[in-house]
Image (cartoon, rainbow, N blue to C red):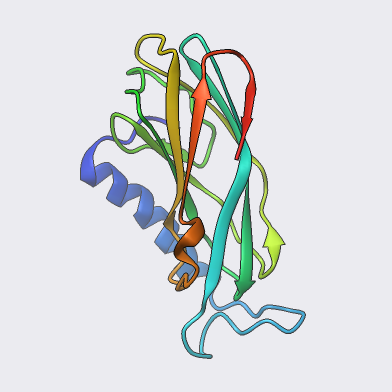
Length: 168
């Protein structure tokens, strides 16, 4: 997927996500969860766990989204922001788009209540070769579900340019 620049590009990306939700319709959570539509305000606690490695100007990231429930989320997106600027050209996986000089947003897909999503893997190139970078991982959009547990909203990871894997 190409680079998304400015608010218009982000609106286009989010418009695709929202239009996809309109087509999919309401979903019901199996196994004792609440219905997504028509049963009041959905609530979901989204978190992300994974690892990051910095070698030279490249940061490799693997993360798995998790929904602590109680409601399912038909679609969500995660934002990854770095303390260093990203290089101008990026090769991002499908479902990910650059949103500004330091950030990328990736879709998570549907997340069942109390379930894990598909792993997201991406590599970004930084401007220069910093000796360290701080990466922030947070929910950019959660499909309209409220998230009462704000304690895990932003994960901050210090990644040193040692080639070591840093978990979060």
